View 1 (cartoon, one colour):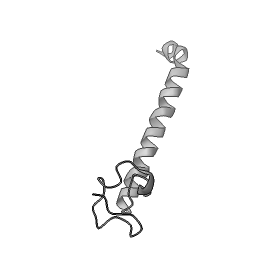
View 2 (tube, one colour; view 1 turned 90 degrees about the horizontal axis):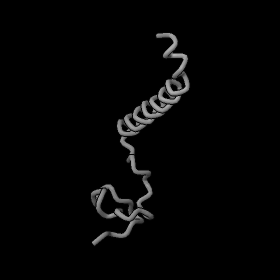
View 3 (spheres, helix red, strand yellow; view 1 turned 120 degrees about the horizontal axis):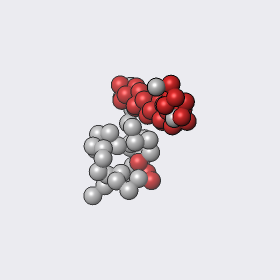
Length: 67
């Protein structure tokens, strides 16, 4: 068993780092959602779907209405 771990230590480390990054990202997204912040970046002016993802009440006053 120890031989297998030694042979595959780089793979184990890489997988562990990737898993840690994913877990930290999910924790960040959960915290932002609980704070009531939008997860898309809050800047709808450059987004191709700016009129489709948020309701009219969530839209900033400076944003033009989307038809």
